Length: 304
Image (cartoon, rainbow, N blue to C red; front, side):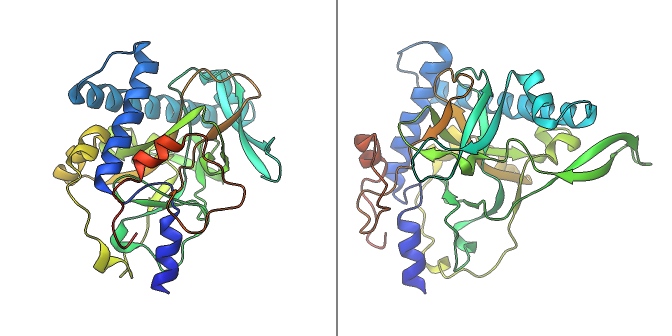
């Protein structure tokens, strides 16, 4: 069973190699930095960290504020209400990729750098990974794994409040941005980034809309293998270092950010970046950026 789990993890969309992870995160951060600043300059690590953290915080607040307002309004369908407030909304429908089933599309106009969707579900630390992982699992650079086979519904708020001033829920529905796991592989118009949402970063009514939950702790078959090297750079660029030090309750996920302007009706795609050294890759998988994946998975450990 351990061998089967390791085999599954070898093809997850993030490397175990600290060197590969750090280099690829910096490369992706530089690409997003260039998009946001319309510049081909070489920013310092401090500039990357500051720009990326500030932008991710802004996008998370913007998206979940619009979602909450659309929920509270209720005068239009939720997706329509979100689009009216943001200018775009992700939409799940039949993919244009042959044999792919559903895909993720943009309705409206999403500007470069926009948060398009997040991976919902339960998140596990590497030491808590269960013996079975679904095909909807995705790994972050820091070893956290999000399994989107566990749907997270959101409460529909009303204008009423309880005695503590909290909104009273009137029902539940699917989150329009909890759809990143529908995005198919291909030449990317979106990049994946780690998103950490500490409890004090959003008002409670918006924090509750983040569609991920911490998985119950359990003894993992991988606990003896959890020997991650120094993640200082990764934590610094992602912003998770501060939250870890402060011991805050943090929701962890992965978001898809637009690499360029994405227009109405376009399908959202990102490079899955499976391990090119894996013995078994899906028959449909072709890497559109082989050099990127090679850098990301370089210096893989013996076990992986």
